Length: 234
Image 1 (cartoon, rainbow, N blue to C red):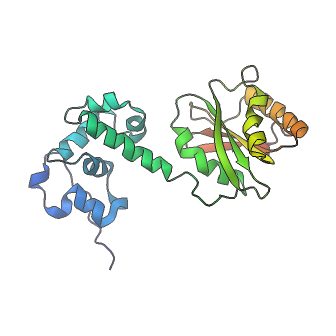
Image 2 (tube, one colour):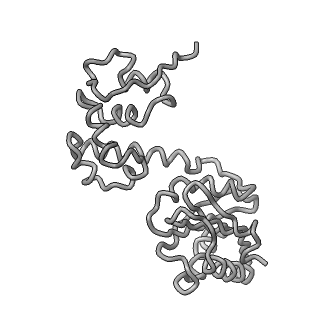
Image 3 (cartoon, rainbow, N blue to C red):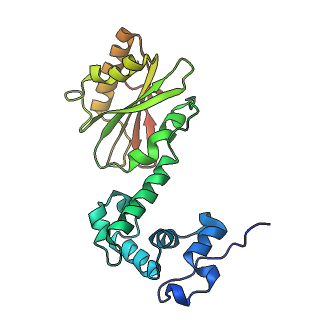
C-alpha cells in the first residue's frame, strides 16, 4: 500500500509537543522522506524537544541554503542557539553521507560519455570554494579505477605541473584518464588557461602512452566537456 502523502505542516508557531504524530518530523521521514521539507529533515537530525525551533534557527542563520550549511565550520553551526557541538557534528556527518551517495560503489563504473564522468563528481565539486583538479583513472574498458585529487588553487598553465597529473596513472598503470576541475564561480565556461592546460596535458599523454579522453569543467549544476567543444584536443 502506497504511503499517504501528507503536505508539510507549517512550523512557524508550533512546537513539537503540540503537533499531531503524523505532522512530526520523525513520522514524516518514516512515511516518505522524499516529501519532507528541508526544515523537517534538519529537525529529524537535530532531535530533541526543541528540534523544530533549532532547525528553523539554522535555516534562518544560513538563509535556507543547504550548501551554506554544508560549507559551514562545525563551530559556526554549533554557535546557533540550541545546536551545540554534538548536534553540529551530526548535521555535518548527515550532509557528508549524502555526498557519498554520488561516489562509485565497489563495482567499477563505466564511463561512456562526459555526462557519466561529470555525474560522479559534480555534486561534491560544485560545493568547493577553491579550484580543485582531479584525475579520473580508467582501465582498458573505460571503467573507473580511482578518482585522485592532484591539485588545488588556480588552474592555469603557469602553475599546473603537467607531469604531476600522470603520476597516479603511471602508478596504477591506467591506460586512460579524464581531467576534471571546478570553477567556484559556478560558470563552467572554459578559460584560455583551461584550453592551454588541456593542450599540454594531451601532448604529454601521447608521449607517455596514456590517452587523455577529456577535460571536464564543473560549474555548479552544469559542466563543459572540452573534448566535445574541440578545445585543446585538435
